[in-house]
Length: 128
Image 1 (cartoon, one colour):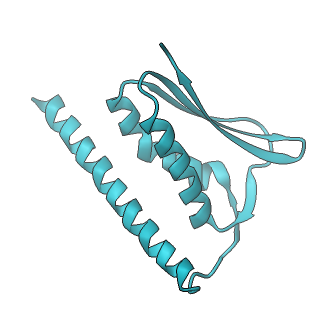
Image 2 (cartoon, one colour):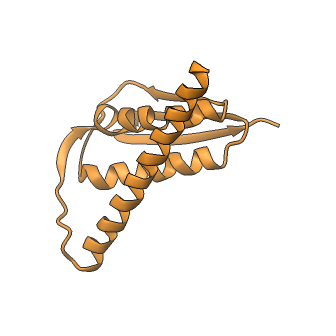
Image 3 (cartoon, one colour):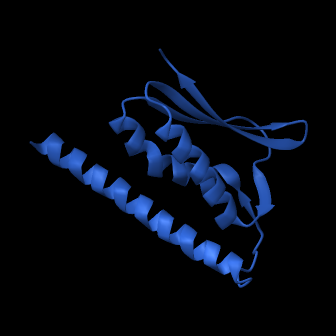
């Protein structure tokens, strides 16, 4: 019984976060269309400021679907100068799509510095 309640609350929590993200996206698109959005770039650490929070947000969805989900940060400079809201929206959509289209297998988010560039990979591996 306790596990069923926990699972139900996790599902409700995930659904609530998806609704908030959708409303946020709609409001953001309205700002862009009316030219009222102000691009606000800042310097931040991509894994700790964006990817870790998204990982924690989506982990319950992957556990419900019974596949492995990992965030792998390799060595290097992980700082970026960008609008953190836009960056979070981009990665949120990539991870959300990976979860939607992975039925069995795993999803990995890998971030590393390669040739003085920051490279982020969202890898889906489907098992048959």
